[in-house]
Amino acid sequence: MKRAIVALLVLTFLGSASAHAHQPVELLNSDTTAAKGPLLVDGTVSFAVRASFTKAGEKKAFRADLKVGDPLAVQYLIVDKKPENTLKNTLLPQLVITSPSGKSVTLKFTERTKFFEPYGKTNYLYLSRYNATAEAGTYSFTLTARAKSSVTIAVGEREVPGEVIRGMRPAATPTPTVAAPSPTAKATPTPTPSATQAGYTMADVKKANTRAKCWSAIDGNVYDLTAWISAHPGGASAITFLCGIDGSNAFKAQHEGQGKPSLRLSQYLLGPLKP
Image (cartoon, rainbow, N blue to C red; front, side, top):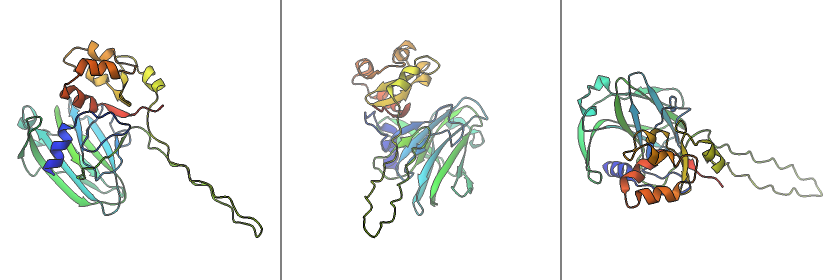
């Protein structure tokens, strides 16, 4: 599992139409409930879900789909530096896992095991590891802050491509029922419609062209860069000029050969850009 966490924390940006396994997932301020938060389509695939809080009482949440009998593997980690490693356990965000049947488990902090991630040269601490056999359906993960802090929740162990969906889950169109054949004629088979693909159009991106809501299309994916505007080391203008446009060439020109900006970008992924 440590090998999986290394991969999760060092994945660089890949321009493809869907999210990939081992990809960091950044919880947004709008992800206040599991229903509003991102969905990990296959909860057995390894993801690192990052959540940052500014004050006590804030909530952030996400979901993960699992099949009956699947392994449910969850780990709670913090960066081994101030202020996180100086906070008492009672001040770190509380994580509650709720099963499809409504059963809830509150993760208890049972360890402070050091873990050095060599690629980013970053020290982490494992605080809790939880394993169970899954029910069929959607699990909810809800974090409640008890002080200003940041944590990483690792979910899943399989190192294979995965998918993250934001917004409404794509709904499959039901297959039409073929009428029973008459004695003299045969019914023509009707093909099964495919599920609707999640994604965003360029029209959606163009509407989000302000500091208050800044989206950009980069290499076939759509990103919500709003939170990055105030945090970018190059200043707000380095991000605001990407708002509402296809910023692929501009982003590459500005950050060519730099791994950290690409890793940071992947944290703001909304989904694929649809034609």
